[in-house]
Amino acid sequence: MILSQKNIEEIAVAVIRDFQKSFFGSEADDPARFALPTPIDQFASDYLNLKVSFQKLSSDGSIYGLTAYVDTEYQIEVDGSQRSIFLKTNDVVLDKSFIEPANIRKLCGKRRFTLAHECAHQILFQLDSDDRKIACHKRPEVRGNGSRVLRTQEDWNEWQANTLGAAILMPQSEVDRAMWFINSRKPLACYGWRFYDSDQVKIDTFCGVFGVSRSAAAIRLEQLGYLNRKKDYEYRDPLEVWP
Image (cartoon, rainbow, N blue to C red; front, side):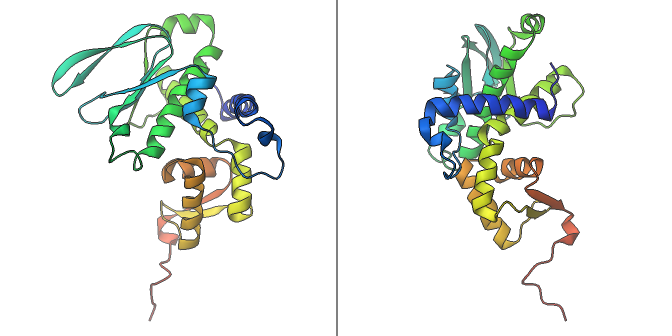
């Protein structure tokens, strides 16, 4: 199943609207409210009925998470030795580093996005055709730290899960509300990955509202027209003095 950005946004809208009604109740319909960030842990456990646990998935931190559609087994190598992780239907396993005391705050955005990514895999699997389900249901979906060129079905699966995961964590309607309060719905300016101080405060505020990393926020804001990406050389240090 190959979906467009528009298709994925439509799926996210339907799913989030249904979840918000059940989780937030009447608050979700209040036109004057502030943005409601998606509580991804409750979305995973209460709405999708996923069981989330944490294990060490790799020696080098290259595997962030995985999920299974049916009972299956996944082979990993940790500290030079092979071992098996036995997964049951709807299990999600995230890397144990996310819950180490020193990382809970530092990796919060990455953990939330990884969980949203695995939730997206589960949603997309349920929407797939029966023959595709049979072909891939025994293989767990694995999220690592690599970037991909979209050439194979697996590449598309990962892109779609990233895109739907972002739309679940940062629903367009909630981004619209947040950006109205943060910047009157005007786009921020980004020079490479640098921001002027005023826009830096605003994107950090956005990150705090939605519990995401700055990179995830920048990509989502750019998708929705709330971030203008400019060339690095266009940046001018406001403290630089010209003779």
